[in-house]
Each structure stands twice: as C-alpha cells, then as structure tokens.
Image (cartoon, rainbow, N blue to C red; front, side, top):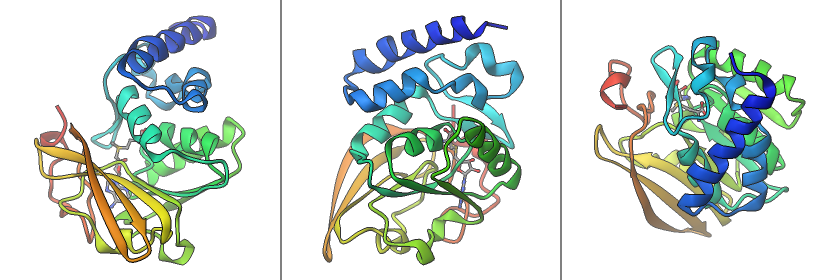
Length: 227
Ligand code: SAM
C-alpha cells in the first residue's frame, strides 16, 4: 500500500496531468483536489488506483466519478464561499467533500444508506462541519431547504425534473446534471433568472442512473450505464 507521501505525489500528478492539462484552471478547486485524500473515499482494495484517470467501484453497484469529471462539473458551477448547495448522489462523499471545501453549506442526498453513512464519517473525519446528508430519493430535491444557489446531480436523469429546477435560486441559481439513457448522456448546465431557464450542453458523459420518482425505475441496471 502506498505511504501518505506517495499518495500526495500521486495526487499532485493527477492534478497536473488529468486536470490542468485538460484546461481546469480554478485555483481554489485545484488546491482542493491537491489536498483532499481521494484514496480515503474508495474501498481498501482500490486505494492504490484512487488517483487513476477513471471511475472506480465503491460497492452497491455504484462508482466514484473520474477525477476529471468531478473537476469539470465543479468548475462549471463557479462556486462561491457563501453558496448554499444541494448535491444529489453522495456516493463515496469525495465530490461532497470538494463542495464542502468550496461552498458555504452543502446538503447532500443519497438513496443507499450504507454509502451515505460511510461518506458522512469520511467527511466528518476531515473536519468539515458545513454538511447535512439525507438518505432518500434525491430526484425530488429538498424542498424544505430550497432555494439553492447551486445544485449538482451526480447520477443520470431521463429528463430534467421540474421539481429540481424549481428549487434553484431565482437570482442566477445553477444546476448541473447528466441527462439521458445509457450510453448517450449529456452533461447540461441550467441557469435560472427569475422565471427564465437557459440550458447549455457541456459534454457527453456516462453516469449511473438516478433512481427515483423523477428518475429511472429501481429495476434499471447501473452496470449497463457505466463502462
Ligand atoms: N460523486 C460521487 C462520488 O464522488 O463518489 C459519485 C456518485 S455515483 C456516480 C451516483 C450516486 O447517486 C450513487 O451513490 C447512487 O446511489 C446515487 N443515487 C442514484 N439515484 C439517487 C436518488 N434518487 N437519490 C439520491 N441518490 C441517488
């Protein structure tokens, strides 16, 4: 198993080769990804591969996203320290920890309680207190805590759920989410100005399915979504 010094070196290389070379340039984000121990968010057997340029299994047929995708989604949200953020799909908690690092307060929803519990423990151990993890169906958002300055969905929805865009701050709130069935999904960025919503297509992508009332049904097979 690599030592903590070796992990730090792998992390620096990940930032330089996978992120900076592909155009990620937000210095606060790069600092966060240079310092957050991604290997602590993957199962023991995958730790030596935690800084590779790929998603990895985290159990329950789910994945931790590829570092570049985490960086790309985060950079496109242009987070500010005062932002209130909703994340849907806590997964390993790695992306959640980055949101906690960059934003004011983070609500995160995960439907698989075992993953939610492990993520909460990992992020708590790193000292972040600006987080509230909920177990449940994130496709419905968190209406009691709305509006949100930013919403990030880390699982693919069949279409944009109206309930989520309604939970965006009317003054420039933004939502990023993958839309579509396997294998042709598209990452979209939605911006709200009052009652107007504009959509920008950013990238082709492959995410596990968002399972829930406004997502796919529970029989959908995650394995068919991710290569
Ligand atoms: N960003 C995460 C990370 O860094 O580990 C990866 C998230 S993984 C690609 C997607 C997660 O969304 C899975 O943990 C899955 O259980 C969760 N998920 C799927 N449907 C959901 C729903 N309706 N509500 C909440 N979480 C959901």
